[in-house]
Length: 154
Image 1 (cartoon, one colour):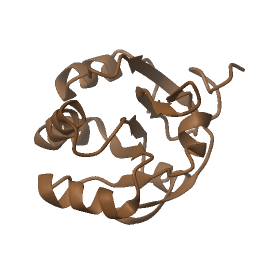
Image 2: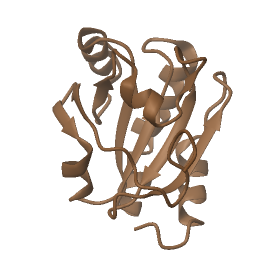
Image 3: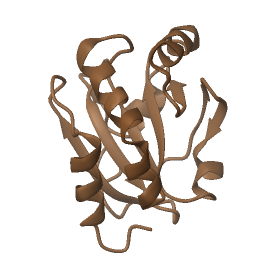
């Protein structure tokens, strides 16, 4: 296994505080696959565009049966303000100590967040992952197309 879970590896389970209460990955997986969205910072231009794109195209994820869970190191108060300002309908998890982000390979130099996406199937395994430079992101429709191409992920 790599430093972080690769495709086919078990996904590290976690419990984090979020804008929708406590999020436990194991519990979420009981309701189907989860797309973990690691993003660098609340209230920044690219991150706001990314999460608003996902908000505006939530039906694309719903059609796939995929739940969204966004994660970064901002505190819960900042997440609440950000989620309210942009009416984000999915949980923003606070990983202040960066433990979960690190376990998924979503950190650069053990401190800065990398824009990463990890699809965890109902079986608790990583089915797809994607990391990009901080200034770019996959839009919801492009992301849904990539997920559809993954064999057996549900």
